[in-house]
Amino acid sequence: MTVGAAPLFGALAAVVGVVGMVPYIRDTLRGSTRPQFVTWLIWTVLAVVVCASQAADGASWSLLVAGAHAALNGAVAVLALRRSVGFAARQDAVVIVLAGFGLIGWLVSGEPIVATLCVIAADLVGLAAMTPKAYRQPWSETLSTYVFASVGGVLAAASVASIDLSLLAYPVYYSIANGAMAALIAHSRRVPMPAVGVAPLPPSGLGRGDGERARSTRAAGSPAAVSSGRQAGRRGDGWTSASRRESSWPG
Image 1 (cartoon, helix red, strand yellow):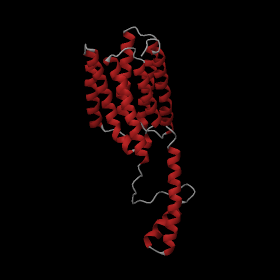
Image 2 (tube, rainbow, N blue to C red; image 1 turned 90 degrees about the vertical axis):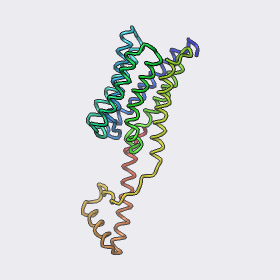
Image 3 (cartoon, rainbow, N blue to C red; image 1 turned 30 degrees about the vertical axis):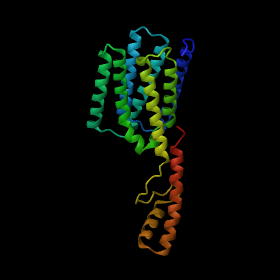
Image 4 (cartoon, rainbow, N blue to C red; image 1 turned 120 degrees about the vertical axis):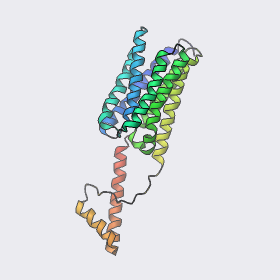
């Protein structure tokens, strides 16, 4: 990559990263996205430490990008306190400790490549913590945010003016990791949901009494019950599909 083009790609990477976070925060506020708290806590701490490190090194314009990244991650972490999928104290504590080891290794290492690998390890721990939730509940994540992040990683790698493993390792990892998460979410959204034995709740246009009568008559096995059950099932299926469409705002 030529030195003259490097700043352009770096600026584009920063813009893409910030823009990609906007839909995630929007969807979290709407309730369609439910972030994994421990993941965003780890990513926030990493972003804050990076920002502080750059400030100590005398960074100027890049500090604005790092600061915006830290602020946006922090905003998601705060929103996740009330909108997260839930907390598992023991598991989250293990995840935080593992990420902490990576963070400490980054801070104390004197070798740039070792420090970068420690950052990748800490970041990867956070990503691994949310992977099961993203697979089981793909609509609880904003797909476009990870697509933007993957593109941003490519642009960041392109902004490196020379072939330097310590500088290329993280943006390459960042692009691959976010691209893999985007692919996982997209694949999980295409997998049909398994059938369950509980009838769907009636839509708002169907009274509770109608739903209860439909369920009770289906249990009786009468012809009228079968007809009522099919009608309620069709209406329920339509309501469920509509709910999914509403909750699947383009990520």
